[in-house]
Length: 192
View (tube, rainbow, N blue to C red):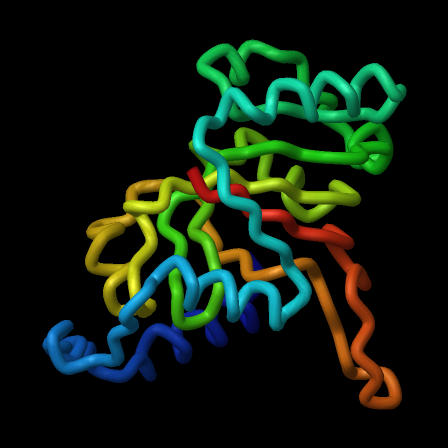
């Protein structure tokens, strides 16, 4: 390591502020909603996503089969054997991914986001490189706020995790909202 780099790293390490304990949040005092599902749906739809209620996850089997028979490149991470399917490893191969079906962790009603991590997405790039992202969540897993979500997640023990809210979007060019600018162009959440 060069001398200047070592000096910089030493200076950064020496100037770290003292750790401050996180504030205690009383979950009974934060916002609550009468209907978590409706709040989640309202927010997600307002940011460009869609929500479909399902009685049973097996209802998606026909949809997935139809996508594949139409010649679309689809990856299905929903079933127990999902980890055994061959997933391309290069971005060039994955750039042809039409639709990704995956399970979601903790959905959050206040902002329409869903926690996903390495265990759910298998390959970190998948939810961000696909054209259309489909996430399946359980109704009983929906929580009111991010405070509740982090309490539910507890100590996060994964290499990578992220809250995904709606399809990708940007408004930094002439303040015009562009959906699907740098990630999935669409997000559909199925609530079972």
